[in-house]
Amino acid sequence: MNDRIEHVSRLHRPPNGSLYVPELYDWQYLHNPTRTAFLYSHRESDIQTITYKELIPAIHQAARLVADIIGIDIYDDRANYPIIAILSAAGN
Image 1 (tube, rainbow, N blue to C red):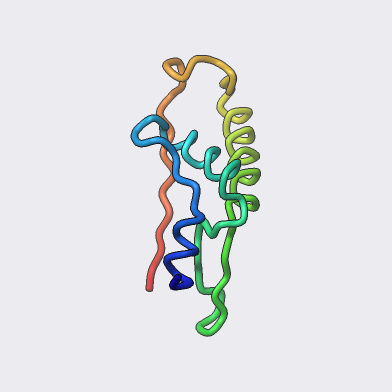
Image 2 (tube, helix red, strand yellow):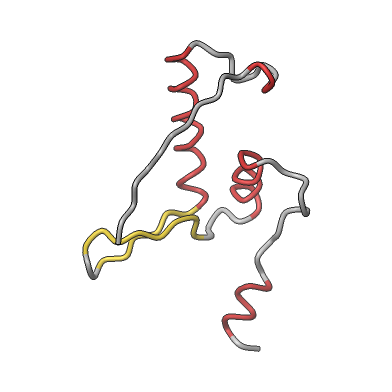
C-alpha cells in the first residue's frame, strides 16, 4: 500500500455534520492528537507544526481567559454567549 494512502486511512474522521467547530477540534484532540493541525514557516527553511495535542489545551486556555475578561460562564448555555470575533492576518 502507498504510504500516503496508508497514512490517510489511519485518520479517524468525525461523524458527518454532527459537530460544531469547537466540538470538531475537541474531537480531533481525542481521536487524532498527534496529527498536524497547523503548519507554518518560522523562517524560510524552517517549517513548524502544531499538533491537536498542543493546540487544543491552548485554545481552551485562551477561551477561559476571554471568558474571564468579558465575564461569561463557559458552562452556561451557548445561546447566552455574546458574539466574539478574532481576526488574524497571514501572508505569504
